Image (cartoon, rainbow, N blue to C red; front, side):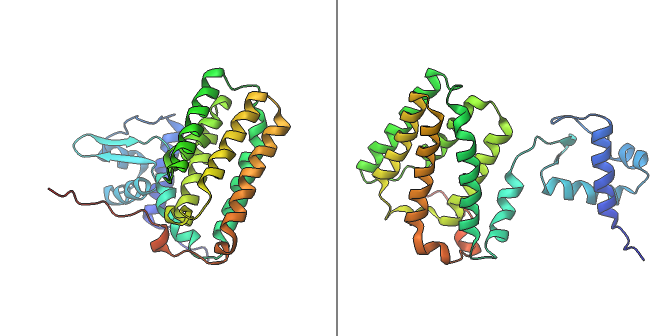
Length: 245
């Protein structure tokens, strides 16, 4: 005997089907609750449960006094739940790095003949900022993240940009910013300059090699740390600081 589908799950399915059938886009307003429940043949209570569950995964947004809107897709809900999944196994960091490496190495060659001089100049500014900070003994997470995002801008693929951002952010949370202080920060900055210089040369093979060398450096620097599984506390973002007067 098949298990009974919970009411909230039925509501989820019905709401998503409604969005698809009515070709609703992010920012579009759904009908009022009473009308929507009547159209879907369910109680308002079941509808509310379905809406709450879809809010939790970033599909809907309920605005007080305004109604229920279709929400633009983001990775926010994934960011919130991934730490718990990744904390389960000790191979999490190694596995994530493997996937991130394959993604970036596999696509970097396509950037060679699509990057504009302005885009290359932006990448160089970021790489130079990394080098300056490294030489001053400072870390450069913001520039590193922006470099990897800007790197694939010439491909004009928003989904790719989201994936790159997702992998970068989750990797940072898994490994922890505090753990990079013993790295050779100047060499890391030089890795990014090498990628930039290969792009300027317009040689896809050289570009792929530069990216491969960058990730190889990361694997070597992590070393035995990959064998120690992180905890959920290690991965979760730090709590908001209370302003002091």
